[in-house]
Length: 184
Image (cartoon, rainbow, N blue to C red; front, side, top):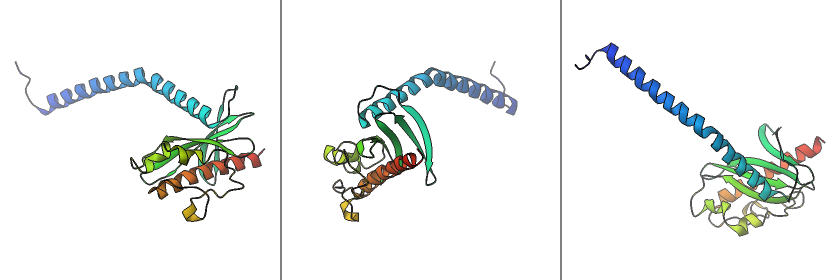
């Protein structure tokens, strides 16, 4: 015999479906939370290893507020710091990890995430000639801005806004370094 369609039966059916779906979603979250956290930790560790000289100690995660913005950085004694810097690019947020040695020079940069236009601004993550120009860069001695703005950064062709954002992210990371150096 079929259940009679009334408000009470519909509400009971909807509640039962919601409970089952919530339990399934919670179960999937419980099963996948640790593997996702492990993958993120491995990605962070690999990024730190790419932006700083070889090190043997465990990087220590810290945070600092500079000019009203909060930054996460990883301190590696004897090697430098790796700063996560996020700015607005052409297509959305552009997040970099910037390695700065103890003398204040840029060791390397890695794009953590971006929403830039494929084939144009997205080259900020893959174009070696653009990325490599920042290796060994001393922000105290060279202007960290694209040539179009009076700086010394060679922009990605047809991606001036992304190049500006990339330079700004590095400049923000350098401000973190200066803030930390001033607080020692």
